[in-house]
Length: 113
Image (cartoon, rainbow, N blue to C red):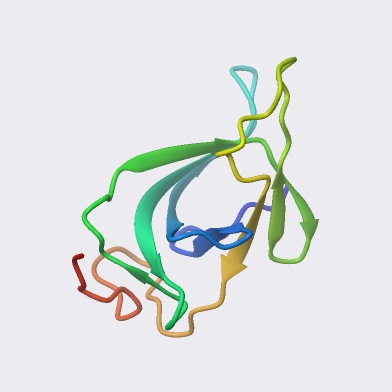
């Protein structure tokens, strides 16, 4: 699998009012599949940008499979029905002015609801 680059933003497909910023990737090893550590942001559909909406917790995505360039599928590996609230696909957000290293990024708007 080719994980999204660290610092990039991904959003669920179909679009929701949140997105994730990839902050760390652990490769697949004997302990388990590849894991993306992601920070949650809000998503503004008008500007198509991440926003700080007060919900910036950490989420984990395991074993994503790249299906086409910039799109990953979350394969459900459990013997139970998939939760309807769990996105099946994730798409990379193309934001030109995002800094890849730490710190603040101009792409994140400071708007709290």
